[in-house]
Amino acid sequence: MYDEQMRAFARDAMARGESLNSISKRLGMSRATLRDWRDRRGRPRYPNDCPRCADGKLDAASYAHLLGLYLGDGCLSKHRREVYALRIACDDAYPRLIDEAADAVLAVHPSRPVHRVQAVGYTSVVAYWKHWPCMFPQHGPGPKHHRRIELEGWQQEIVAEYPELFLRGLFNSDGCRVANWTTRTVAGHLKRYEYPRYMFSNESTDIMHLCQWSLDLLNIPWRMPRPNARSVARREAVTQLDTFIGPKS
Image (cartoon, rainbow, N blue to C red; front, side):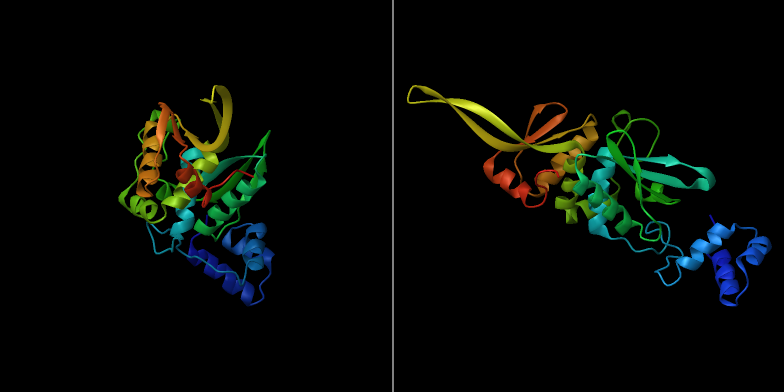
């Protein structure tokens, strides 16, 4: 990674008409990097764009959505030169959710491209940045359910402002909208009734509590059929979730 001063030197040289080959040799960087900077000319630049440790701007609504996706199906992995990759694993059965995940990542970190890496049965939405640990301080070694997951104060404020988008991220990753059924005896006859409900499941007790907290913020009733699952089944509650989550597609 190169600092903004080095980028400025390279851009000034290109503006004066110096060849990429000459600049590459003089500044010790690849021509591919220079070509990328040249071709990206005219796009918005974010010289110091981390919202936490610098002066970058944060799309809080998109971040609330992305935080939910990260806690469900996301992870960070460290690469060379202190660069981290954010990966959101998305089931190929739901192309709309893949698009939404890519849009959320791009809105939070708009200065770099978002990649889609195909695997068996799923697509990883991937973006590289040195500052992903600033944005997701919950990052750590091992599975999330093996370590403490707590939101920092600034994250709590964002979730409290956009609980619908946070829940959308959680349910789009580790939740579903399903058709449930039950039977009742009516006038001596057994009748079957079907009704929709939302289910959210996660092995992390802390993430389960965050889901509960967000539902409580919206006064949405829930129950726990088992320790790692939360159900929303009342008709009015399902209708409310349908307004900002809905079936996967």
